[in-house]
Image 1 (cartoon, rainbow, N blue to C red):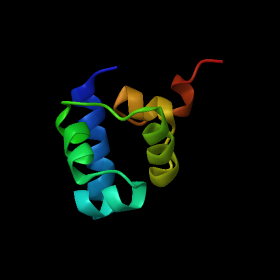
Image 2: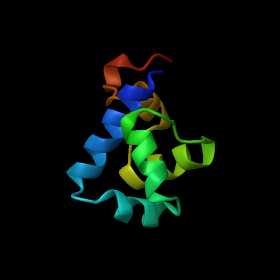
Image 3: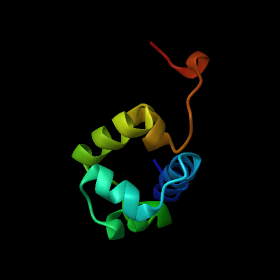
Image 4: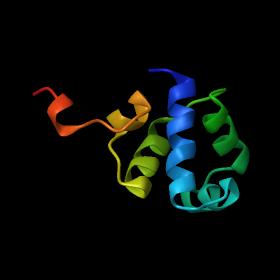
Length: 77
């Protein structure tokens, strides 16, 4: 788990949806400063925010923590 990788991935997901940090913050009920901290790697989302991000972006929490999409063949049982 690398904060910079997480931040880059979250930024990528946000930009794919053509959202501003403020818009994402409003959707997740967090501050835009929190979004900025996550995206710059100076902080990581808490457990509740991870769940919200996962649902909002339709990615797994594991993918967020890995900082990238995880292919199905990479998942170990």
